[in-house]
Length: 111
Image (cartoon, rainbow, N blue to C red):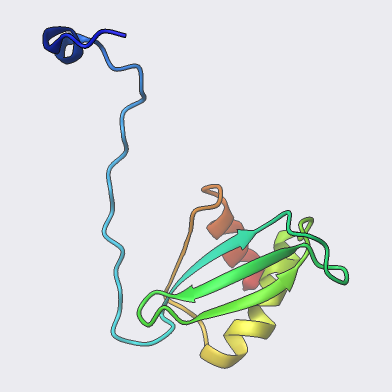
């Protein structure tokens, strides 16, 4: 490892280029912008070993929904329907850091 200033500035970067950051629209209406994430591989409690987290981006209020690690897209949509949608209605934006197809498949199953 070189500590020479010239070497550090001229050394080529081996990292892939960073993607562009996008502005997340936060609306003035509660529960219109949601983020969905999963916490997995938790110690088994009853028959659950994962948590589906749905967070309101405006107020940071959240729903923590017990689930299992092998949850299908249809089951995740059903959990969302019965635990979040029935209380707050349909959101305009859903954000997730799961794989890119997650939101498309999730909304298809939800509808």
